Picture 1 (tube, rainbow, N blue to C red):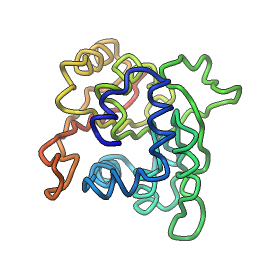
Picture 2: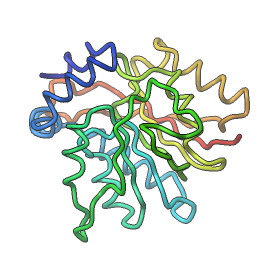
Picture 3: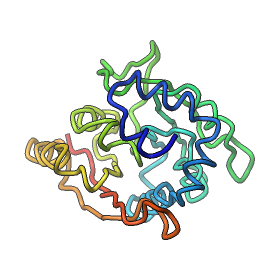
Picture 4: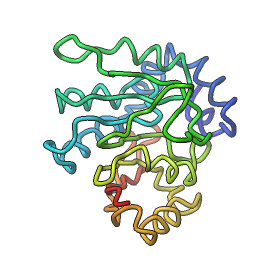
Length: 221
């Protein structure tokens, strides 16, 4: 299993199958093998560009094995992190992660198909919090979740809250993310995003040069 398998995902069922098979070895065969620096980079970006005094809770969209949450918890020791992912096997891996003080990285881990509308902030027959912020890396790209899903998730963040969303730069315009975020700005749902392009992989990776575009903005309505 590799990056090509991930990009070949077309349906929620494809995602469940891929990550069920990959979960136990994902950190070794993908994160380490490909010098996947993106999770650390987006966690550091979140820490630099969102106010510490206004953010107590964050939802990690497409958290997978918890790599983003692990880095973020080391940067903001008091932040409460919930993780959403479609794969129960990936969530099992994330549940084993510990912070520097020995407490769990994630407060809660929720199995959810994010392509389905979460009516009245409920999913899987449980109440979902409204969070102070949202973070996501590696989820919004070709073969995963599209712009319609991204816009639908904005209401998981309180008005005035922050979103730090990584989107594959190659697919940012071609898959409609630029248009969707522009429409959300026009409707005054969000502030105008700032965009920062970052490397997804380190120099030793065969995929070095692939970029993600981090969109940073606030929910305004």
